[in-house]
Image (cartoon, rainbow, N blue to C red; front, side):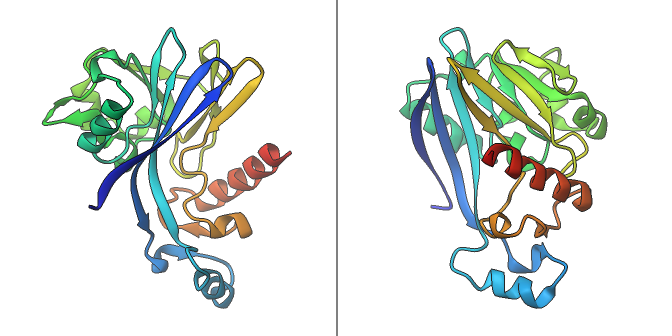
Length: 222
């Protein structure tokens, strides 16, 4: 099946974390851009160079049940949550890295809200750029705009990573001295580890996205 969720569980301090892979795919090679076309083709000829996946992250803090992004297929997301005994009505916070369809489509199921009791946290800059999104209509009074470098909860901080979109945001989650970064679309494929200056046509501002990608990789490698 094109859509088939896989899950990986881990502990982050006292939090339970589940990574949910909604879909695996390969980006079309003609979508990649680089300063050296010949070198780009050498990169792309490597095994799995253009492999990618659509991922969602679920965090149970004990006080809250939180999703980071919702993927591209709500049924697959619901099926995955069911395997870890999570009901959609119990999700109370959803943090969105950006409003591209493959990160927010899971918010809608059968033309209704997938998560009826959830507050949806989205960067103000991202909301300003997507005022006509059906998501905003589906969740009236549930959309919570945040500013950058703001603590959504004492243990969740928003970190600006503009470039891929106008309000692209990462989320840093901390528990008992351990930290996890949900970084959205900082990278799209493995070859960007080899050279972060490789980018895809999806970036709204490739120059800014490139700069952010290089900084994030350095900061978190350190």
